[in-house]
Amino acid sequence: MNKYDKNYTFTLVETEGQLTRFYTENAHVGWLAFDTEFIPEKYYRYRLCVISVSTARDNYIIDMLKVKTIAPLIKLIEEPLILKITHAGENDYRLLVNDYGARPVNIFDTQLSYGFLQYDYPVGLQTLLARRLSIKLDKGALRSDWEKRPLTDEQCRYAVQDVIYLHPLMLSLKKQLKKNNKLHWVEQENRQLEDPDYYKHDPLDFLNTVQVNQMTRQQQVFLIRMQLWRHLEAEKENRPVTQLLKTRVLNTIVQKISSGGSALLKDRTLPSRFIHQHLETFKRFYREAISPHEQELLKRVAGTSGISPEIAIVTDMLHQLVKHKGFLGRVSPNLILSSKEFHRMKTDENYCPPVLTHGWRKELLGKELLKLLENRKDFDITIKKDKFSLTVGRKNRFSIKNFFKRMLKGIKR
Image (cartoon, rainbow, N blue to C red; front, side, top):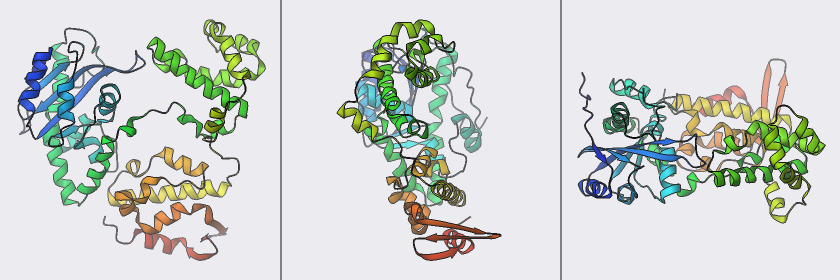
C-alpha cells in the first residue's frame, strides 16, 4: 500500500438523466481527469465506446454506446475554470473536437509535460506512474472488446484506473516543473491541444516526401487521385483506409499503372478481385488531364532534386546539436522538433519550422543555433585531414570547437 492507493468505485452513466446529474455534480469542480476507449481498427472514424472520468466528487464511466449525447461533458471540457488532465490525450481531444465539435481549454497532459523533465518522451502511463508515484497498473484489458456489452468488471477497473491517478501525477509533475522553471514552457505546449486546427487530417500530407519527388508528374497526379479516392471509398463503406486499400498495394499500383491494366492483373502481389473491380477507374485516373486544382497541389511536392548533399549533411549535424541542447536542458528532442520536420528541412533548403521562432523552443535553443538553422543553405564545409571548418556566408569563419563552446554556454546540467 502507498499513499496514492485508491479504490475503484465509480458511477456508471448510461442515460441522459444520469449524464445531466453527472454534469450538475461537477459543474464547479477545479479539475477533471478523463480518458477514452475507442475502436480504431474497424471503422473509417474511430468508434468512441467509453469515457472514464475522475473528479474530486467521484469516478464515472460514461457508456458512449448508450447515451445519445455528451453535450454535458463537452460543457465541462470547454469550461475554462476546470483544469482538464489527460495522459497522451491528443487522440482523445481529436475525437471530441472532430466528431463532437468540442473546443477544449485549460489542459494539462501528463505525458507531454513529462517530456520537459526527461529525455525519453513519450512515456506510457504505466511506466510514468511507476516512476513518479510507485504505482503499478494492470493493463490486461487494453485490447479488450470495448463494443461488447455489458462491460466486464475488468474493463471497468481498467477504465477507472487510467484516470484516478492523473490528478496526483499532475501535482507531482507541476511541482518539479516549477522547481526547474519550466512550467511556463509546459503551459505553452499544452495550449496547442486547444487549437482545432491541430487535429485536422491532411490525406495528401505524403506529397512532401522524397519518394513522391522521384515519381513522374503523371504518377504524382495519379497518386493524388488514388489517395483521395481511397479516403472517399473508405468513408462511404465505413472501413479503415488501409483495410480498403493497403498502402503497399497502392504503391505497387502507382508503379505499374504506366504499363497498362494487364500489368496490374498479372501481378501476383495485387488482389486480383479488387483490381478487376476498379481497373477502369484506375485507368481513367491515370489518363485524365491535370486540373488547375491539381496543379496547385503539385506545388507541395518536395523539391529535392536541386538540393546539394551539403544541405543534408549540415541539417543532420544541426539536428544532433538540437538533440544535445535538449539533453543538456532535460527536454526531449522529440518535443523540440519532430523527425518529420527535420526531414522537410533537408528537402527544402528555405524551410524553417515556424515553431522555432518563438516561445520555449526559441528560449531553449538560443539565438545562435536558431540563426544557423535558418541559414543552413549558406554553410560551406571544409575538411582537410584532421581539421574541420565551417563558413556561414562569406564571413564569420569559425572553428567547430569554439562554436560548441558558445552554443553550450550557460546550459545547466
